[in-house]
Length: 302
Image (cartoon, rainbow, N blue to C red; front, side):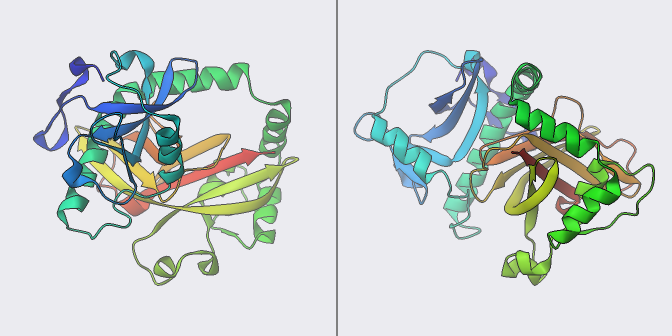
Protein backbone atom coordinates (compact mmCIF):
# COMPACT_ATOMS: atom_id res chain seq x y z
CA UNK A 1 0.00 0.00 0.00
CA UNK A 2 1.20 3.57 -0.60
CA UNK A 3 3.33 4.73 2.37
CA UNK A 4 1.65 8.15 2.15
CA UNK A 5 -1.62 6.59 3.37
CA UNK A 6 -0.09 5.84 6.76
CA UNK A 7 -0.69 8.19 9.66
CA UNK A 8 -1.84 8.70 13.21
CA UNK A 9 -5.10 7.10 14.20
CA UNK A 10 -7.14 6.10 17.22
CA UNK A 11 -5.48 5.24 20.55
CA UNK A 12 -2.53 7.50 19.65
CA UNK A 13 -1.14 4.84 17.30
CA UNK A 14 0.75 5.39 14.08
CA UNK A 15 -0.40 3.05 11.31
CA UNK A 16 2.22 2.18 8.69
CA UNK A 17 0.98 1.08 5.28
CA UNK A 18 0.98 -2.75 5.22
CA UNK A 19 1.68 -5.25 2.46
CA UNK A 20 -1.52 -6.85 1.17
CA UNK A 21 -2.44 -9.75 -1.10
CA UNK A 22 -4.93 -8.84 -3.84
CA UNK A 23 -7.50 -11.65 -3.91
CA UNK A 24 -10.07 -10.07 -6.22
CA UNK A 25 -10.30 -7.21 -8.73
CA UNK A 26 -13.75 -5.90 -9.55
CA UNK A 27 -12.69 -3.97 -12.64
CA UNK A 28 -14.14 -0.67 -11.40
CA UNK A 29 -11.15 0.58 -9.44
CA UNK A 30 -11.81 -1.50 -6.31
CA UNK A 31 -9.75 -4.45 -5.09
CA UNK A 32 -10.41 -6.93 -2.28
CA UNK A 33 -7.27 -7.62 -0.25
CA UNK A 34 -6.00 -9.67 2.67
CA UNK A 35 -3.36 -8.22 4.94
CA UNK A 36 0.11 -9.80 5.03
CA UNK A 37 2.45 -10.17 8.02
CA UNK A 38 6.17 -10.94 7.66
CA UNK A 39 6.71 -12.27 11.20
CA UNK A 40 6.08 -16.02 11.23
CA UNK A 41 6.03 -16.01 15.06
CA UNK A 42 2.52 -14.54 14.90
CA UNK A 43 1.14 -17.14 12.50
CA UNK A 44 -1.83 -19.12 13.80
CA UNK A 45 -5.12 -20.77 12.81
CA UNK A 46 -6.59 -19.24 9.66
CA UNK A 47 -3.25 -17.99 8.32
CA UNK A 48 -1.78 -19.16 5.00
CA UNK A 49 1.98 -19.22 4.44
CA UNK A 50 3.43 -17.43 1.41
CA UNK A 51 6.40 -19.75 1.24
CA UNK A 52 8.23 -20.46 -0.99
CA UNK A 53 7.14 -17.59 -3.28
CA UNK A 54 7.31 -14.82 -0.68
CA UNK A 55 8.17 -14.26 2.96
CA UNK A 56 5.48 -14.17 5.66
CA UNK A 57 1.84 -15.26 5.78
CA UNK A 58 -1.62 -14.07 4.72
CA UNK A 59 -4.17 -13.07 7.39
CA UNK A 60 -7.24 -14.55 5.70
CA UNK A 61 -9.42 -13.28 8.57
CA UNK A 62 -8.34 -9.69 7.84
CA UNK A 63 -9.92 -8.95 4.45
CA UNK A 64 -11.23 -5.59 3.21
CA UNK A 65 -11.75 -3.45 0.11
CA UNK A 66 -9.40 -0.74 -1.15
CA UNK A 67 -9.12 1.61 -4.07
CA UNK A 68 -6.74 0.15 -6.65
CA UNK A 69 -4.83 3.43 -6.81
CA UNK A 70 -4.02 3.05 -3.09
CA UNK A 71 -1.56 0.33 -4.07
CA UNK A 72 2.01 0.68 -5.35
CA UNK A 73 4.00 -1.69 -7.55
CA UNK A 74 3.68 -5.36 -6.52
CA UNK A 75 6.43 -6.83 -4.38
CA UNK A 76 5.77 -10.44 -5.40
CA UNK A 77 3.41 -12.97 -6.93
CA UNK A 78 1.88 -16.11 -5.39
CA UNK A 79 0.85 -19.38 -6.93
CA UNK A 80 -2.80 -20.06 -7.72
CA UNK A 81 -2.99 -22.77 -5.03
CA UNK A 82 -1.97 -20.20 -2.40
CA UNK A 83 -4.75 -17.87 -3.53
CA UNK A 84 -7.24 -20.75 -3.46
CA UNK A 85 -6.11 -21.71 0.05
CA UNK A 86 -6.61 -18.11 1.21
CA UNK A 87 -10.17 -17.98 -0.12
CA UNK A 88 -11.07 -21.36 1.35
CA UNK A 89 -9.61 -20.46 4.76
CA UNK A 90 -11.27 -17.03 4.93
CA UNK A 91 -14.15 -18.30 7.09
CA UNK A 92 -11.95 -18.28 10.20
CA UNK A 93 -12.84 -15.39 12.52
CA UNK A 94 -10.22 -13.04 13.87
CA UNK A 95 -9.70 -14.30 17.40
CA UNK A 96 -12.54 -16.78 17.11
CA UNK A 97 -10.32 -19.79 17.87
CA UNK A 98 -7.64 -17.91 19.81
CA UNK A 99 -7.45 -17.77 23.60
CA UNK A 100 -8.76 -14.38 24.67
CA UNK A 101 -6.06 -12.26 26.30
CA UNK A 102 -3.19 -14.19 24.70
CA UNK A 103 -0.38 -12.49 22.78
CA UNK A 104 -1.78 -13.82 19.50
CA UNK A 105 -5.25 -12.52 20.42
CA UNK A 106 -3.88 -8.99 21.00
CA UNK A 107 -1.84 -9.17 17.81
CA UNK A 108 -4.87 -10.08 15.69
CA UNK A 109 -6.98 -7.32 17.16
CA UNK A 110 -4.25 -4.78 16.35
CA UNK A 111 -3.97 -6.13 12.81
CA UNK A 112 -7.73 -5.76 12.29
CA UNK A 113 -7.50 -2.19 13.60
CA UNK A 114 -4.74 -1.52 11.07
CA UNK A 115 -6.88 -2.87 8.26
CA UNK A 116 -9.83 -0.77 9.39
CA UNK A 117 -7.66 2.37 9.40
CA UNK A 118 -6.79 1.92 5.71
CA UNK A 119 -10.14 0.47 4.56
CA UNK A 120 -11.86 3.51 6.02
CA UNK A 121 -9.90 5.78 3.65
CA UNK A 122 -11.47 3.96 0.70
CA UNK A 123 -15.04 3.82 2.02
CA UNK A 124 -16.29 6.88 0.16
CA UNK A 125 -15.07 5.70 -3.24
CA UNK A 126 -16.15 2.09 -2.66
CA UNK A 127 -19.69 3.14 -1.80
CA UNK A 128 -19.87 5.64 -4.65
CA UNK A 129 -18.92 2.93 -7.14
CA UNK A 130 -21.32 0.48 -5.53
CA UNK A 131 -24.14 3.02 -5.73
CA UNK A 132 -23.32 3.65 -9.39
CA UNK A 133 -23.36 -0.06 -10.17
CA UNK A 134 -26.71 -0.45 -8.44
CA UNK A 135 -28.12 2.46 -10.44
CA UNK A 136 -26.75 1.24 -13.77
CA UNK A 137 -26.83 -2.54 -13.38
CA UNK A 138 -28.36 -5.37 -11.42
CA UNK A 139 -31.00 -7.87 -12.52
CA UNK A 140 -34.50 -6.94 -13.49
CA UNK A 141 -35.86 -9.66 -11.24
CA UNK A 142 -34.08 -8.24 -8.19
CA UNK A 143 -35.22 -4.70 -8.94
CA UNK A 144 -38.82 -5.84 -9.43
CA UNK A 145 -38.75 -7.83 -6.19
CA UNK A 146 -37.45 -4.80 -4.32
CA UNK A 147 -40.16 -2.51 -5.71
CA UNK A 148 -42.82 -5.07 -4.85
CA UNK A 149 -41.56 -5.45 -1.29
CA UNK A 150 -41.32 -1.70 -0.73
CA UNK A 151 -44.86 -1.25 -2.02
CA UNK A 152 -46.44 -3.58 0.52
CA UNK A 153 -48.10 -2.23 3.68
CA UNK A 154 -46.26 -2.86 6.98
CA UNK A 155 -48.99 -5.26 8.14
CA UNK A 156 -48.35 -7.52 5.14
CA UNK A 157 -44.59 -7.60 5.74
CA UNK A 158 -45.17 -8.28 9.43
CA UNK A 159 -47.42 -11.20 8.51
CA UNK A 160 -44.71 -12.68 6.27
CA UNK A 161 -42.20 -12.50 9.13
CA UNK A 162 -44.68 -13.99 11.61
CA UNK A 163 -45.13 -17.02 9.34
CA UNK A 164 -41.36 -17.55 9.60
CA UNK A 165 -41.53 -17.56 13.40
CA UNK A 166 -40.16 -14.02 13.77
CA UNK A 167 -41.67 -11.30 15.94
CA UNK A 168 -41.75 -7.54 15.25
CA UNK A 169 -41.78 -5.08 18.12
CA UNK A 170 -43.69 -2.37 16.30
CA UNK A 171 -47.30 -1.34 15.92
CA UNK A 172 -48.92 -0.86 12.52
CA UNK A 173 -49.13 2.89 12.04
CA UNK A 174 -48.95 5.15 9.03
CA UNK A 175 -45.43 6.24 10.02
CA UNK A 176 -43.98 2.73 10.22
CA UNK A 177 -41.55 1.97 7.37
CA UNK A 178 -39.98 -1.21 6.02
CA UNK A 179 -36.80 -0.23 7.89
CA UNK A 180 -38.73 -0.06 11.17
CA UNK A 181 -40.18 -3.52 10.56
CA UNK A 182 -36.87 -5.14 9.70
CA UNK A 183 -34.94 -3.45 12.51
CA UNK A 184 -37.51 -4.42 15.15
CA UNK A 185 -37.59 -8.08 14.09
CA UNK A 186 -36.62 -10.35 16.98
CA UNK A 187 -34.78 -13.63 16.43
CA UNK A 188 -36.44 -16.54 18.27
CA UNK A 189 -34.32 -18.12 21.00
CA UNK A 190 -34.37 -21.54 19.35
CA UNK A 191 -32.69 -20.05 16.27
CA UNK A 192 -29.82 -18.55 18.28
CA UNK A 193 -26.65 -20.31 19.42
CA UNK A 194 -26.66 -21.57 23.00
CA UNK A 195 -24.50 -18.67 24.19
CA UNK A 196 -26.99 -16.11 22.89
CA UNK A 197 -29.98 -17.98 24.27
CA UNK A 198 -28.30 -17.96 27.67
CA UNK A 199 -28.03 -14.17 27.49
CA UNK A 200 -24.29 -14.04 26.79
CA UNK A 201 -22.67 -11.38 24.60
CA UNK A 202 -23.49 -12.68 21.09
CA UNK A 203 -24.56 -10.29 18.33
CA UNK A 204 -26.58 -11.49 15.35
CA UNK A 205 -27.59 -10.04 12.00
CA UNK A 206 -30.62 -11.26 10.05
CA UNK A 207 -30.39 -12.00 6.33
CA UNK A 208 -33.82 -11.93 4.66
CA UNK A 209 -34.48 -13.65 1.35
CA UNK A 210 -37.21 -12.02 -0.74
CA UNK A 211 -38.79 -14.04 -3.57
CA UNK A 212 -41.41 -12.47 -5.83
CA UNK A 213 -41.76 -9.57 -3.41
CA UNK A 214 -42.35 -11.78 -0.36
CA UNK A 215 -39.92 -12.47 2.48
CA UNK A 216 -39.80 -16.26 2.29
CA UNK A 217 -36.91 -17.23 4.56
CA UNK A 218 -34.19 -15.88 6.81
CA UNK A 219 -30.70 -16.75 7.96
CA UNK A 220 -28.70 -15.60 10.96
CA UNK A 221 -25.09 -14.47 10.85
CA UNK A 222 -23.17 -13.85 14.05
CA UNK A 223 -20.74 -10.97 14.36
CA UNK A 224 -18.53 -9.11 16.78
CA UNK A 225 -17.79 -5.40 16.93
CA UNK A 226 -14.08 -4.69 17.26
CA UNK A 227 -14.30 -0.92 16.73
CA UNK A 228 -16.59 1.41 18.64
CA UNK A 229 -14.54 4.60 18.67
CA UNK A 230 -15.61 8.20 19.20
CA UNK A 231 -13.91 10.97 17.19
CA UNK A 232 -15.34 14.32 18.28
CA UNK A 233 -19.08 13.77 17.69
CA UNK A 234 -18.69 10.89 15.21
CA UNK A 235 -19.06 7.26 16.29
CA UNK A 236 -16.97 4.90 14.15
CA UNK A 237 -18.20 1.31 14.08
CA UNK A 238 -16.42 -1.67 12.58
CA UNK A 239 -17.00 -5.38 12.95
CA UNK A 240 -16.26 -8.86 11.67
CA UNK A 241 -18.59 -11.77 10.93
CA UNK A 242 -18.04 -15.38 11.91
CA UNK A 243 -17.92 -16.30 8.23
CA UNK A 244 -17.79 -14.65 4.82
CA UNK A 245 -21.18 -13.17 4.02
CA UNK A 246 -23.15 -14.69 1.12
CA UNK A 247 -24.16 -12.45 -1.77
CA UNK A 248 -26.72 -9.81 -0.83
CA UNK A 249 -28.51 -6.94 -2.54
CA UNK A 250 -29.08 -4.50 0.32
CA UNK A 251 -27.31 -3.83 3.60
CA UNK A 252 -28.76 -1.85 6.49
CA UNK A 253 -26.96 -0.68 9.61
CA UNK A 254 -28.74 1.37 12.28
CA UNK A 255 -27.93 2.72 15.68
CA UNK A 256 -30.72 2.14 18.21
CA UNK A 257 -31.35 5.24 20.34
CA UNK A 258 -33.92 6.29 22.93
CA UNK A 259 -35.88 8.15 20.24
CA UNK A 260 -35.71 5.57 17.44
CA UNK A 261 -33.37 4.39 14.70
CA UNK A 262 -30.42 6.51 13.60
CA UNK A 263 -29.13 6.16 10.05
CA UNK A 264 -25.38 6.27 9.34
CA UNK A 265 -23.76 9.37 7.93
CA UNK A 266 -24.38 9.27 4.14
CA UNK A 267 -21.57 7.47 2.32
CA UNK A 268 -20.04 6.03 5.49
CA UNK A 269 -21.68 2.59 5.69
CA UNK A 270 -20.83 -0.62 3.91
CA UNK A 271 -20.26 -4.35 4.11
CA UNK A 272 -18.07 -6.71 2.15
CA UNK A 273 -16.94 -10.29 2.65
CA UNK A 274 -16.73 -10.74 6.43
CA UNK A 275 -16.49 -7.13 7.64
CA UNK A 276 -18.77 -4.11 7.93
CA UNK A 277 -18.34 -0.48 8.89
CA UNK A 278 -20.43 2.62 9.60
CA UNK A 279 -20.18 6.10 11.07
CA UNK A 280 -22.88 7.94 13.05
CA UNK A 281 -23.27 11.56 14.10
CA UNK A 282 -24.12 11.23 17.81
CA UNK A 283 -23.71 14.84 18.93
CA UNK A 284 -27.34 14.94 20.14
CA UNK A 285 -27.30 11.68 22.11
CA UNK A 286 -27.45 11.93 25.87
CA UNK A 287 -25.60 8.68 26.61
CA UNK A 288 -22.86 6.84 24.68
CA UNK A 289 -24.03 3.88 22.59
CA UNK A 290 -23.20 0.26 23.37
CA UNK A 291 -22.33 -2.63 21.05
CA UNK A 292 -25.82 -4.02 21.51
CA UNK A 293 -27.26 -0.81 19.98
CA UNK A 294 -25.92 -1.73 16.53
CA UNK A 295 -28.53 -3.38 14.27
CA UNK A 296 -27.58 -5.14 11.03
CA UNK A 297 -29.97 -6.42 8.36
CA UNK A 298 -29.38 -7.82 4.87
CA UNK A 299 -31.80 -8.52 2.01
CA UNK A 300 -31.35 -10.87 -0.91
CA UNK A 301 -33.76 -10.58 -3.85
CA UNK A 302 -34.45 -13.66 -5.96
